[in-house]
Image: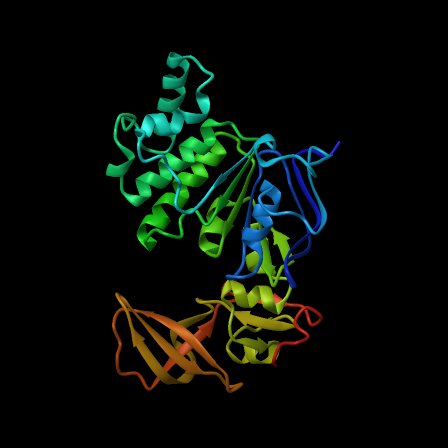
Length: 333
């Protein structure tokens, strides 16, 4: 018998618009799969279909091999955590977390609430009003409440998108620890690839309703299956192996090579390239250079360097993705 979640050729339509187009994906028990893509890629529609909040126009959603068609939302044993947390403002932190434990005795409920609050770094917060919490604290309470129900599948829809960048970086580790610490099977929807790579065992990339690639974070980053995936991950520009060799990669493989954010490193002894634009940020400078192929690329330099006419660079193969000629057939060379 197939265990866990199976999405089989799922289709979701809104009128004439196909939001999810024949997507198939499996999530094993205890596995965390992140679904990433730009706005409108269909990732949230896919999550809502799995939860039973959107009807399928085609395909199936199964749990442990059993088709969930006709099973209402409240009987699927799934939980959904949204970006606003949806806490009950009239209840304390502890009563929010323990809401799904109403069948348990008061002592058991209090013990479980304390365990979960400690898991999300809010030990001792049980009696506080949720209206007194920061945004990050509220999302941690929402996670603890979702885990309290013991769902066989937890789905998280952009849970950190409403928070500032610093808070997101801090909380993604808390989320990852909470999910792994409880062995929770989870589908995590986000547009932020850094979140996905931190939290997930595997990452699924969607575009225009279609599933483009599913892989481990490391494999996805090193070997994107298409130029569309590579571009979403931040690879640009794309150059030929000959151009890569001209930048110092002696054994550059055949195919189209995507340059990641740190593919070009400053090197006084490297290839000299003209600088066409300089952007100074906090503690670093980003220089736009013109490659021999005529395309523009970026080089990160530590510190502030406002006046640059040219710099020496070398290519770092570890910061590059190599696309096969078939996968990159539409790439400019």
